[in-house]
Image (spheres, rainbow, N blue to C red):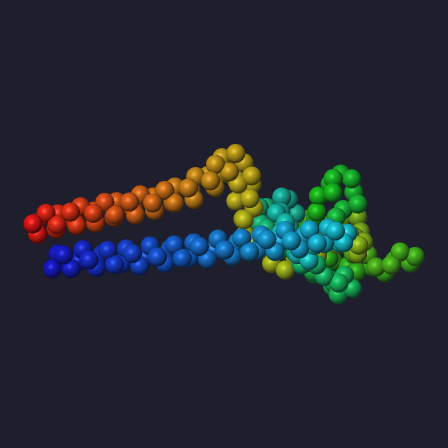
Length: 202
């Protein structure tokens, strides 16, 4: 009975290990595929002098709280600006040198049709009391926010640090090392059993 329990435990452990391993591999493949697509699309758009079809931007300002918080990552999709409407959240390049070309994510509160200029967007951070003084030109719009990934930016900032890079290298390396050690131990145990069986048969 005790031996049956041990066998069952081993089977459950192997099943769990396989599920975790396959899940981890699939996730890595998905992330790698997305990264390749992201970089490739960005390079193609850069050669054409255009904004990429989509992008990921980490929020570093609390101006859009509570809907979008600091360290949230927003997924931006390039869109025909004529289809933008009030309440859409957009990411755009500011013409104000104070921001140093850092993309800003705010909500459209009004669409203006200025004589001799054309369409412009009045935007506002959800947490701000008043709208931005600067109006946004359509050609400065990077894209529309489609969804957010809460707090993913913390991972990004962590991995960008020295400790983060070390962590990102050590964890996969440790997993591979442990896996190899387990395989080696199993082989040694199997070899000892075979040797023991052989000696008994003599």
